[in-house]
Length: 138
Length: 468
Image: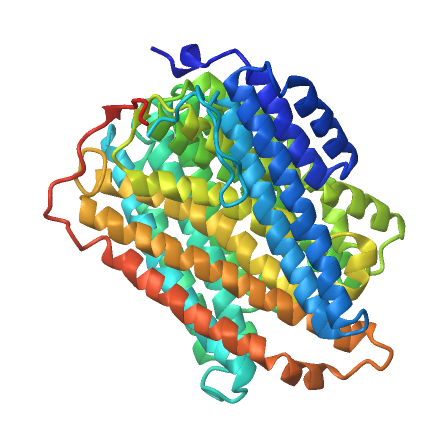
């Protein structure tokens, strides 16, 4: 039987939208996309299917962590290291690029999971999955 | 292996792996020369080691592409190769020409090599990556034409699929664009302008088509996802590649004497170049998530996924890092470029060749679908060692590049080049150590062809099933 026939339709588009907004927040429209994601999460947090709730919750917590890791931590590095220090910029740019890329790859994986109708928990920063999540293949 | 003539790919893959090992050894020599300037001098000067390192890279990737085409085209076209004999003959011509060229670099002073090979009749030598003597370049054209004839005739007389047609377009583009290696005007601006038509339009144009088609082929075979789904992804990916990559050539035209509008065109279009790589990542993960079977060759699936991720990081992210004109004004030609070059070449092109080798070699060596468990475990170890060490090589070179740009080009009191080189030596040492780890990974990779070769292969495909 084709795998596509097994896709749970319930919540699929919401799950994909959540991951797309997470990625947009990192890549295209920082802040704006996060606000849209928050609104989507708020509107569907109670009654959406498990797949959608899982991806919405993962995307929101992932975005919050991204804010801490990319904005707050970098600001701390600059404050501690000094704006004019060459080593400050070595650390800031290398750290930002590496961390941002890792968050984008997590998002790409999350998007692929959402498109395949599967739940996925972000490594380290993801929230526990709700009951009734479609299971992954092994 | 469905067709006997696919076996010619084994020759190409074997040569590719051998030349890959040579490239890494010269990379380690080069890395050490950055910090111990007279290491192996005068036997192997820095400029020669660099030339050998980069030329071996190009040649082994080309061997890999040709091997990939000889393996996948018969299967896609559902017929034997048009002329396996021609493929074997061209293999030896290419290998001997390549070996003689490398020996020429190592044994004869470069100007003497130019004289010996009659460069004055049609001067094409002396340009980065296109250092080959003119006669070698003519040999490359002959090999490429014979190769295209062989592949083209096979496709034209067989089944036409999106995979083999995209591959054919990519390979034709590769051959046609190489012809600009023969155009060597006196005007330096024009020289650089068209030099990028070979270098950029290869790696950020037609090679991406080859990468996409090989990746699509391996994913069709290993996941069992409908061909139509994979082909639609491939269409969109190659469209985005060409839309962004062709005008994206402009990011090389910022400071070479071309009109200023290239700063806008280059910045805007090359900023979009990560898109096809990002799509490739989502595509690869999506196909594996939607797989209809668990292929026994887990190592090949790992290489395929790794290619998508590392190509996105190396070519996409690290390319974007220094592609905008105002940034590139400071970073041009610094170690940031080297960081991007290392991860992009490894992630996009080295890994896709290793992917198709990983998928095809077991069958060409008599297995039904995959190697033994021991062999695959070793191969996956080599994947992680090489890939993680390449990530660290890239990070160290990025750190070196940022410090270099700051001290040499950005600060109020810029320091001379060689003074800065001493200040960033720590990064070069770290890169060299990480390069040794990469070498260990490569040794394990080669060992994986021999370890467990008598063990039974991993069980043939089982249907994918949900698990907790």
